[in-house]
Image 1 (cartoon, helix red, strand yellow):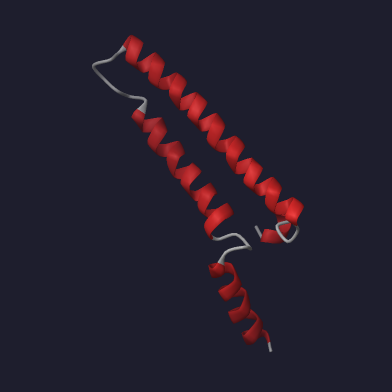
Image 2: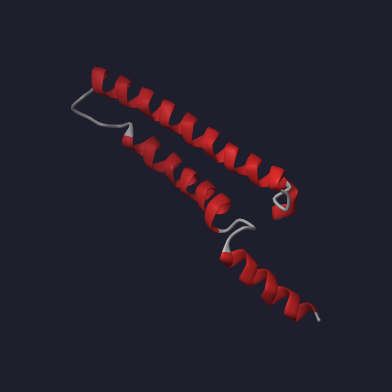
Length: 89
């Protein structure tokens, strides 16, 4: 997917991407919190909720990196874009 697929070029698109990440993070925290409660009250001797927490956490991390670190506002994106523009000539 390209940054333009989400309208990242516009302020509205960037705000939507950041809001989508915040929503994703909030849902993650609620679900993992719920799983942790169920786990602790049903089988406290075996903490199984850490596995979905870890797996989904990787997705949250990648989503956050995509929005904040590698998005069109980042220096990395700008440097890559400049590099590609120089090679298009």
